[in-house]
Image 1 (cartoon, rainbow, N blue to C red):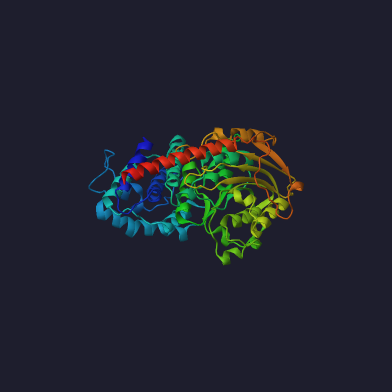
Image 2 (spheres, rainbow, N blue to C red):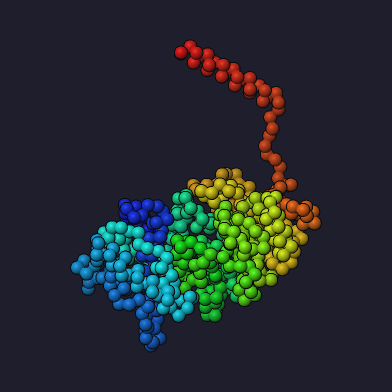
Length: 484
């Protein structure tokens, strides 16, 4: 049922003049979905307070509650069309009153880790793009069909929301930056293996896939005590995100996965000077797929010892610095990082190898990221001791990856199995850092164990084919001359 509701909402937004892409559909669905979630959240808190004999104080004022402005209902439980706003009245209320009211929570909230602050932050960052109040009425009615009360309902909703993010990523343009394939994220989380009590960080949080999957992983890692459950809610997952839409989607995604007030900060991570990072700022785990190909301004580059315009290289410096000693990282980066000869690349490889144990490199095939042709690798490292040996695994598949043929967990099963003991195979091998050229620190992926399956033809075969093609061309030209 939920799936059909989401499809119906997309169909409504598709016909609205203010929504022109998958990005708009996700953004506009998100704020309405968030307000419905908030209504169910408040009802649950109110019920819990009553059972405990306590009084619950509403977050949202009476005029702005979901069942007052969005879906006022009669005694029969159906929408009261006499009270329900629609058309211009609905749009004017949302634009002129609702958003202004919700924005104020950012300044009135007690702290940034509260649901109140998240309300204010979200509604300060976006605007309503649904131009037709009649379309908005339809969307609200559809969203009202959704429920966030039981864990099963929240679980289903989180999967559907992930699918929307995935579709947005597949839609091209800049949508792909919000979506990292979930099978890859799950695999990275498995290898890094966070534990309860760790602080997990993603400084390029996007849609918060790494934090959501880490939460799912830790939820089933052991029988959780009340203290464990509270730690997962409040003190485990941290993220930063520069772009408004990604910040909203990431926050909403974590909420749907069960984190009530996600610790995601809307900021440019790279604007922070590395020299200002103190021990108290550090994390146990870093998991990220930073944007690559971006170009950062000179003033941003001044925050880093290794100056470069390449966004991903600045992020890698940030991640190394912000990890605690003994902390672990799993970071996606372009595979050219391993072999580029420019000064920044060489210096960064040297820094990584000397300050961290780069124990594993996973080489991914092209097409892993739908809509992006770049080849990538995943760097797995532990901070505190220099690298002695790097274990490489080259993912070789018998099919081309793409939107209709995406990466799946089975594709990565051998990697996960062999990685535990760093075993050699047709697809994996180890390199001693002592054998690496100390002037370039080149770590290019060159698999010594894989047999080259390309069969070269003999010169005679090639010459015969050329003769045949020449003969064919001559016949075509002869035919053309006859027609002229």
